[in-house]
Amino acid sequence: MPIDVRPAGFADLDTLVAIENAAFSGDKLSRRSLRRLIGSRTAIVGAAGERGVILGYALALTRRRSGVARLYSIAVAPEETGKGVAALLLHYVENAAYRRGFHTMRLEVRSDNKPAIRLYEKTGYRSFAQYENYYHDGMSALRYQKSLCALNMENGPK
Image 1 (spheres, rainbow, N blue to C red):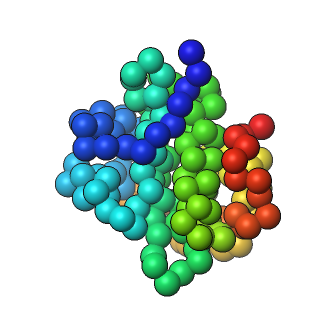
Image 2: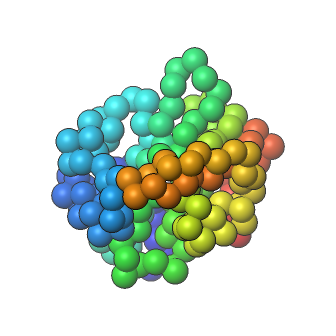
Image 3: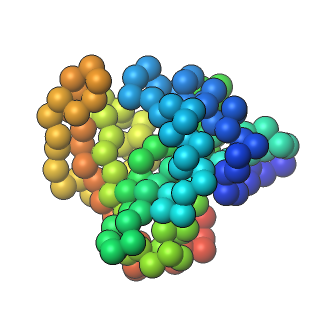
């Protein structure tokens, strides 16, 4: 059965919190923050699932007067990594942002997160800056961006 991605709802909150806590050692979103973001009109929260089980989620933030959306987080249950879930979630939030009128997606990624960096570069993101001492443990962040305008947003990841 294929993995599908849909908007996350309040009923998904417990699972999203569990995935967040399993996926990240620090800089975690709290239950309260996730709940607020699921209900926010300026956030895009997608949940990837298979046979009714949520495998991961992605969160992008938008601002009304900006053409730039920000990928804030992608979290996949550790036992589900390597199955293409993150790529599907990334495509979902890109497509949703594009449909809302955003032409660019930006993100920050830990400079030591090689799998995420490979995904972003493979899907067309280009590095444009770096933040030193960005994460809770002092790790730097690489900043990436991608134009959403020239894409055929309806096609999924290759």
